[in-house]
Amino acid sequence: MSYLSFVAMDPPEHTRMRAIVSRAFTPRRVAALEPMIRQIARGYIAEGLERGTFDFARDFAARLPLDVISELLGVPRSDRADVRRRSDALVHYDPDGKLAEEGLRTILSLGDYYASIVADRRAPRATTSSRRSSPTAG
Image 1 (cartoon, rainbow, N blue to C red):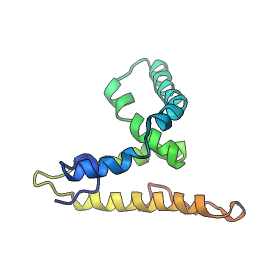
Image 2 (image 1 turned 180 degrees about the horizontal axis):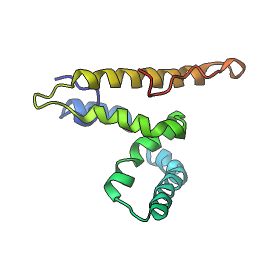
Image 3 (image 1 turned 120 degrees about the horizontal axis):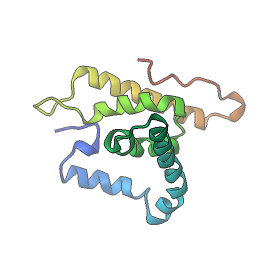
């Protein structure tokens, strides 16, 4: 079975993909990321204090991993809620293990969004423009 996210994979495919990804997250690299991760986490807690309510699973655990990845990729904070919503489609499959057509379209548009971020990062600074399409487009 083919998946768009290794989170939904079983061994040995999951093990192979995890080995590839884990090379980027050595103990030294993770230690270097700690201040940024703590800042993001503290922001979630501050938001909960302002609201007067906090659901750990929804307001913290479900947001932190993707927001850290978004920070590393350069996703603007203003786009992150929509990126999280779209990324959620990566782990939702029908009972037969197939991704719904709407989910596939969502994932493809998210892929286009990430590709535009990469293109912007590779472009010379003088010509970098707002080519990036919002993740809500598509």
